[in-house]
Image (tube, rainbow, N blue to C red):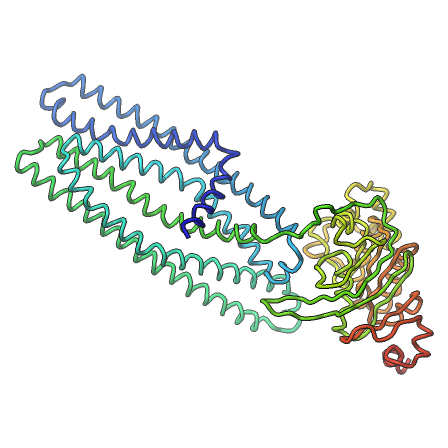
Length: 581
């Protein structure tokens, strides 16, 4: 446990390194401020014991002037702490957010299958904000407090060492209270983080699906669902505040008791002439100075809990292994597109459970040919599409492209040569131009327009007031299903890959729109190795080979005419779809 804490602290400290100069200056300012805080009680003692009784006006004015000068300098130093100290925290937060985002880009698809978008967003926003606050206030406040505590103890010893020891004998009780309540606080803060991530995920899902919930008049259901999550949040937050209340009330009592001990013991020492009036006043002021850093440490403790809980959650994501790359992964100059599945087995894993999708699956797609996968849902057709670009790792067998085992290829090189058009088109919140340019970010304006023309979407884009600069909205909500599909096809045209995967690319469209899209897809498939997944058999009649897949594996394979003549599953599906036509 102790080793783990040291490892966590070491990881946290490394984010200070790029900003160490600013951080060191921040610490120097904090040190100077703490020293200034120790000067005030000493000057007060001199004024009461020396300057006023002896009517030393010059020294009185000089002492007051010195205090005023120190306060002006202190104000400047506090400004630096508040501004540049926070800048250090914000820059560290930006570094962590960049590192986290880049790491997320490398995580396997299975991670996103198991983790909600809202939970991930919570870790990138709420958690990193708390870490930023800790990065600024944590070291600065702890350092300032410790210097003040040590300095105050030394000054108290100069006044009366026995009185100082009496005061500091009370402090261990405060440490014991802190240790006893620390674990409960840690668990409470962790629970709140989890629930907060869940409620963020529910909000993200509800807002994204607002049109669906309205269409099905399901607002009440969504409100009830959100209400349940909200109740969990309230319960977790109340539990957190309960522990915080116990902690703060205990610590406040301790500090009040410390002040009580000072007044009682100091009063007795003054009564028995062991200290004079100035020393008694200075002693009370030093103890007041002593209480301030203790209060700071109490408040910073909560921030440390928040920040370290956030950092622990940040590390949980950073510790998820990224997609593995073969040490000797190759990057072929050109891929022709011959694909072969050799006895492939694959299972989805969810919370330790395995869901076997394909077993001992073999299939060959010659370069430049079109192969169609058809059959009932659950046969693994979409899974086959996901395995070619290596979105998931197979459990057994081998998948080759041009004779290369895809596990021996660099992922970027493999995926660069594969274009995918899916049923559920994802468009990024940006312009039409930006979404098409995802196919090739180095493309010129002319190339983007040419890709749009091939996808039969250029005329529509040109009719818009802002043309290619039209914002598509979140997930392309401002475009129709057919328009979004054509933008995704334009994206694939621009990429110009030798391998093309069409996964139910037209199944969600009406017949008229489907005919327009099919024309664009036919042009897109020319000269490419194409794998088509379709439920509408009319769209795959001209494929070089049609493979019928069921949960038991490959049931039938052949051309459209051969499968009809076979009189098996394909014929039954075909006749059912065209029944009454």
